[in-house]
Length: 500
Image (cartoon, rainbow, N blue to C red; front, side, top):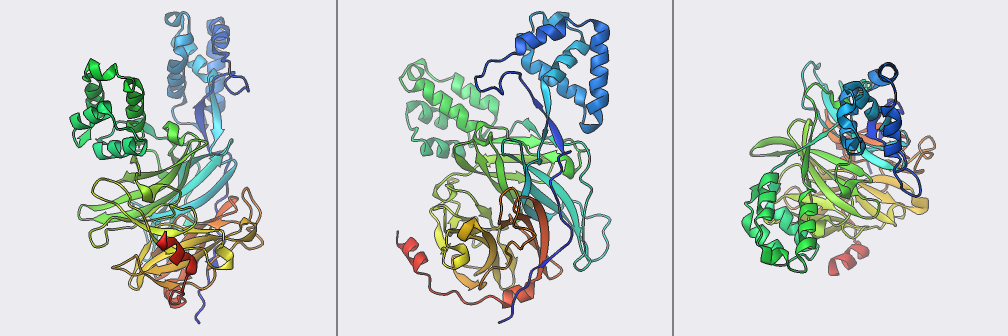
């Protein structure tokens, strides 16, 4: 048997606590018993004389200005969020308003707790490279205080050969600005169906909406509902559900001069208020050309939900919910193109088995076909994917993860038929990558985990999180990895899953 050996690179990424954003801070809301102290604070600031107000603001800008982009605009925005508590708002000078905003702000270190679970795709900009080089965008799960996850980025250059260089990550961070989006009626209908919300109000709204609509059209349709429907016992709660489901789709955009390393996709809806986890990016190609897609897990502190984001340039991102039986757990990963006219994704809807799901005409991910269930000792707890399938001449290469004793995570591999990916045609015997002695300690011990790699110059490039303490990089010759695959063995556990 030819053994596939993954070679670790010395280059690593570690959490950087100096990477900070500015968040709204309301005194009192961080206490066990929530009682805002905003009014009293604003009154104290309002009683400062003009010279003291000016001096304080200058000091704040000198101390924090180089750590953030356009800090004064952020202060003005935070003032606008609390100005309803200002008794005599018109009496406050512009400087005093900015100072109020400063007192209602705080820094948040987006990756102070952990940095992990990377994926890698070709960068939109390939200019200025030497022969044999590829510039890549690396997505990162960054975790801060309170275990709050967001999506960040780094830039790297692969090659020539096994050369690897990581771009500078310094510079003020920018949180994506939420903007309007063309909503999809089919996703609204699917969301209502999942919540068993089928009544005269919801049916009337769906019937009045076009296939794609903006926020103004949505509100106009709601405003035109007959009083006879709104007065029904379900009227008010249905309107609330409609608005909540509709708000799950949104777009986030960044300034054109904000470098990729500075961009932060930050939770923007209640469903993802406790985190945007484990983004699996892929460069998707169809007849309209290439586009970036990624799936991630939205977490609100109690429930998880699958989301998909789409971007032409990694500057403007559209986010939509994923619906259907195939999207009911973590870890979906999209194929990079259609297969036989079908849009496919890997999933783990039962929590422990790798499956294959297909998107139907109504925007629903269908019940999955099981591909691989826990079988080997290193994966007996559960298995899942480590990113989107990678197309090779031999088949779809699927990087997997398995969880074994002491919740130890390792990375393996499968090979799927190119034309019929529901057929597993190869399995890597044993793990490709497992935590070594230098990687076992961290925020989440004994874990190596990836959200997606790529092939460049005959090498599989695999970024991976090591115990959430750092992000490492490994390479393995693609030919050696494919040659090490063995025909799939009988899997009683999989047959059991298929019968259910």
